[in-house]
Length: 115
Image 1: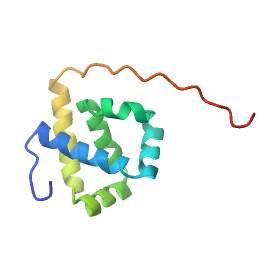
Image 2: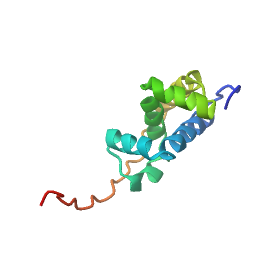
Image 3: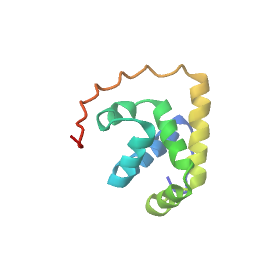
């Protein structure tokens, strides 16, 4: 959304989805994202329907200057637009009830590689 203002929740969510697509397009970025958030690959698509999740995505990248630079260079989404989208989603979350809770996917058994 270069050169455009953020008119409201729809624009803010659109930016968040673009940023999420940027994250999942790179293996290293998605692994780091999953490790930090504790999400599983199977739950991202369902989680992405929550405005609270999208707010979390934006807050995640807003805390990393290198991430912001990469998004600015590759997607032409300015850090200021990300900050404005965060503000819109925070304001929206304060006036809306929390989205329904998403049941976590069942955990797959983990193998011990050292046996």
